[in-house]
Image (cartoon, rainbow, N blue to C red):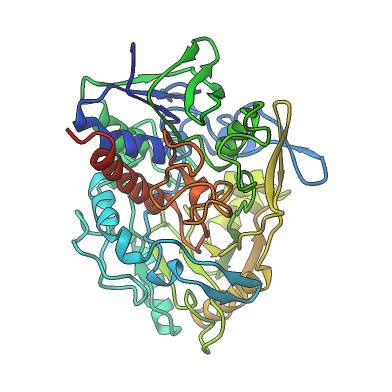
Amino acid sequence: MTNPDVIIIGSGIGGATLAAALAPSGRRILILERGEHLRPSPVDRDPKAIFGHGHFRPDETWLDGEGQPFSPGNYYCVGGNSKFYGAALIRYRAEDFEPRQHMGGRSPGWPLRYGDLEPDYTAAEQLYAVRGTADEDPTEPPPSGAYPHPPVADEPDIADLRARLRGAGLSPASVPLGVDIDRWLSAGQTTWDAFPNTCGGKMDAETCALADALKHENVELLTNAPAEKLLSDKDGHIAGVEVKGHGTLHAPMIVLSAGAVQSAALLLKSANDNCPAGLANRSDQVGRNFMNHNCSAVLALHPLRRNRAVYQKTLMFNDYYNDDGQGGAPLGNIQMLGKITGPILASQTRLPGPVAALIANRSFDFYAMSEDLPNPDSRVTITGDQIRLDWKRSNWQAHEALVAKLKQHLRRAGFPIVLSRPFDRRTPSHQCGTARMGRDPTSSVVDPYCRSHDHRNLFIVDASVLPTSAAVNPALTIAALALRAGRHILETEFAA
């Protein structure tokens, strides 16, 4: 595309959703994606290849806070990480937008309130064809419209589990999901959580938002096009994007949607004489306040009861989301993991295959998730092209309390054996922060519409702008923010 009006860097949830919002304007939109399309392959449903051999993981090394190398679990392809996500499309709760006290510190709240974003949540649920119901979860914030589809049905053993959890004093609810279950299962009998979407069964950034955007002739996707540097002039205007293999591309508006770590790294790498600390970084907040949910896998077993579920991930509960059950601090969200199988369990442990299969065939697998709090010392930095991620985990006491509560309820529900294991510190569990949203340019990177405080023609639209991590999956909130930013651009920049 020659002379685009907008260049969007990244085709994940943020970039693709913004493209869909802007496409009807007729403005020329060029989307840059560093990776390629995922194509169907023989290993798409092979758990040993995916979980044991890391078949789809990129050949990439970052450093942790101690300078030790590790391989991050980020994916670079059309649709970004959403091609592998668990498709849980949950709204932040209304309380998540307010300042509140946690066991590990105080959450600062947002420059928005839930009501400011609610219309965009409803629009995002339509765009991503979410399957859900607002009638089961007491913490569900008030919606202005119904979900476009009913929830994905529980399998028989999960329906029995739902009844057991209710009997144990909990309020189980259906997970809002972006999954066409019939289409997904027609391509293979596995869960979708962490498996690549090459059949179109998951409602991800490519199958929904990007497909919608590319229906318009004024939108073009350029793959194998990694952005290496943003160029700015002395007046603070972002003048262009250096793209590997494609030279320098120019557009009046630049949107950065590369994800919390890569967006921060690109801004820092783009430092120049006028912006020696990096672009959009007059506040010294770029790369700071990195957050990553505190998560654990919890397996409940009964030696005489099998779990015959294939996908399992239809149930959650938020009984301890807003307090600890006694009026104390919030603990977090519990939802089902995609069904763990013998090969998956064996690849993540040292268990022999037959033992792993014996456990997996009887396990009901839960995902406990607690909020990580913003900390300016939890940050992304760079040396040359090397990314260093120094994650300062916070609020761990709340997470331990959440796991303990879950174990108590599972034993009451008839499971004598309950095992738990925290996710590795280096495992990406909803990375966010690093370019925080706020009204004060001295303490934030973007304004409430995702526009850079320092560069009027630069927008940052991805998880990096989230001021807090909350304790639910962030994908729907990123999509809602992208739609809000898109509406703002249409009204202020593209008005006829």
